[in-house]
View (cartoon, rainbow, N blue to C red):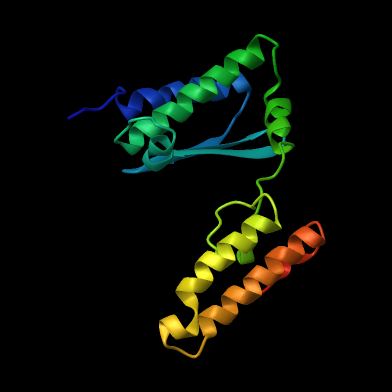
Length: 176
């Protein structure tokens, strides 16, 4: 069983104070607990907050077991950013603002989720194939019910097909 990967949190709290000094930040807040940690500070009038957790690390294939280790990783990442700023490669504010202009994540409309898609399918034919597959499972004759599930499936399929015929405009507001 793997043990703690980083030194004591006190070490990283002191290191964080030095990093904040390098950024020219007078006040900062932080906390860490059993499952993760966060650091927030105001840089040139803008509030920034960095969070990390054991769960996020695990999702990225990293093996940490303690929230204090997640906190340590945030401090080390900020230290790397401080180096970039000191070397003139980036200004922290420009670097972070650049992150804000990344394309927003694609929101999968509920009607696709109702059809079992975790992403927007490639075309209406994919929707039709999925509908036929699910219709066999949700048909009222199979479920011996009033057909509510089947009607919901039909509505989702119609909305999903309309998404492709209207190129997705205005369809994200369908109620489910």
